[in-house]
Length: 160
Image (tube, rainbow, N blue to C red; front, side, top):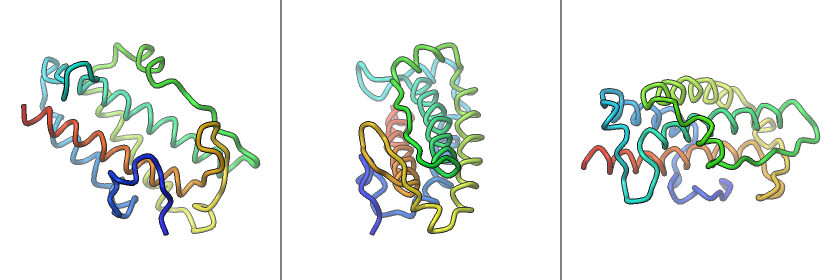
């Protein structure tokens, strides 16, 4: 039975490795030809722009990929939470296209790592201050659902 994460509903039973291979490509197809002005559109008033969502996704790939690697190589491991808004403020100068390229590149690395893991590797447990004891498999499922969650935002922006 797959783990339950905050993005389980978004993943909707899909294989997380399949989703991690597909979703960044779908995001790229939607956004790669956008102008800087198009990257500044949002899916709803008061929400992040497409550029900010891409920055957030790239940051998440970086942070959660590092978490998985640390959990696989450090016992015991307790992950460090991060404030997504504070991180966004630090990377606010990144362009939409640069964030897209970073997202795609890091997602390729993470997916390759995840695809190479044995069932025992995926069962590797670590601690998160908010979620308690979780596994690398839980993290993989969370990342896949999180990407799909934000893909829907790009679809709304592209349709507007």
